Image (tube, rainbow, N blue to C red):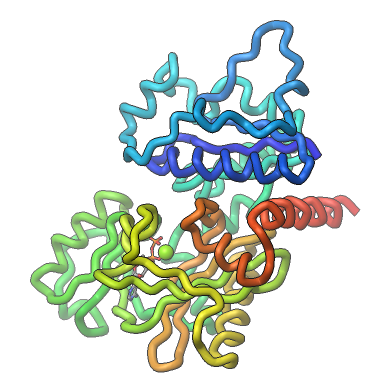
Length: 353
Ligand SMILES: Nc1ncnc2c1ncn2[C@@H]1O[C@H](COP(=O)(O)OP(=O)(O)O)[C@@H](O)[C@H]1O
Ligand SMILES: [Mg+2]
C-alpha cells in the first residue's frame, strides 16, 4: 500500500511525534509498504517537476534528517520553523496533496492537534482515509468531562468529579474528601494535573490546570494500582500495569527512560479482574464511538476498576503502552502498525459496501 505517516504538527509533543513517526514509517516499510513521512506543520516544498508518487519509498528513511530532540518546544520556536511562521495555519505546504496520493494516512501525531478531531475533520472533507477514530469520538475522548459523562451513562465506573471554570472553589463545594486530583478537562501527558493533598492547595492547583484549558476537573483520588488496556480491531489486548516507584505517572515518567517506571504486561492480577477491565475498556471505547484502535486507562481500588480516561491517538514511542501490550499478545511493533492500517482499511471497505 501507499501510506503517508503524518507526524510533527504544532503541539508541544511534536518531537515525540516525529520520533514515533520515523519508527512507524520504517516499520511499515519493513513490511513492504511504500511510505512517505510527512511533517503536518512543515509540509514539503515540491519542485515543479516532482512526481508526488516518488515520495513514497520502501527504503528506510534517514532518521538524522528529522532533527529529533527531547526539547519541549514553545509556540514561537515551532512557528519559527516555517517561512510564513505558521500564518497559513496548521497544514504545511502540499500536505493535503501528498495525503491525497496515498491509500491511507497513518496518524502519528501526538497532543492536541491530532487528538481533538480537527485534523480528522479536514481529512474527511478531502476524502482522505486515516487511522484511528473520527472527529466526534476524538473530540469526546479528548475532553475528560464529556468522556466521564458518557462513562456514567453507560454504567462504566469512573472517579467521582466536579467540573469548574474558576479556581475559586472551596472544600465545602466538593462532595468527596481530600486528597483530590485536579486536571485540565482537555489535556494530556499529565501536564497541568495535580494530586492535591489538602484544601489549602486546591486553588493554586486549579489556577494551574485552568492555564491549560478553560475548564478543570476535580476528581476523587483513587488510591490503587494503575492499568491500561489497548483496543485493536474490536478486541482488548492484555492489560499493562504501570508501576511508578517514586511519585506518580507524570510527564517525566511518561517520556523519559528511567528505572522509575515499570510497565508490566501481562500484569500479575487475577483473571476475573483482567477480563472485567478488558470488557469495561471495550464498552468505553464503543460508548465514545471510537474506531480502529485506542486505549482506556484504569485505576483499581479494592478490586474495583475505575476508568480514568480514553486515548484516541495513543503514543507509539518505544516507551509507550500500546507497543508493550501488543508484544504481550505476541504482536511485534511492525505487525502492530500494519494491523492498525489493515483494520481501518476493512472499516472503510465495510462503510462503502
Ligand atoms: N482520580 C485519580 N486518582 C488517582 N490518580 C489519578 C486520578 N486521575 C489521574 N490520576 C493520575 O494522573 C495521571 C494522569 O491523569 P490522566 O487523567 O490520565 O490525564 P492525562 O491525559 O494527562 O494522561 C494518571 O495516569 C494517574 O496516575
Ligand atoms: Mg492518562
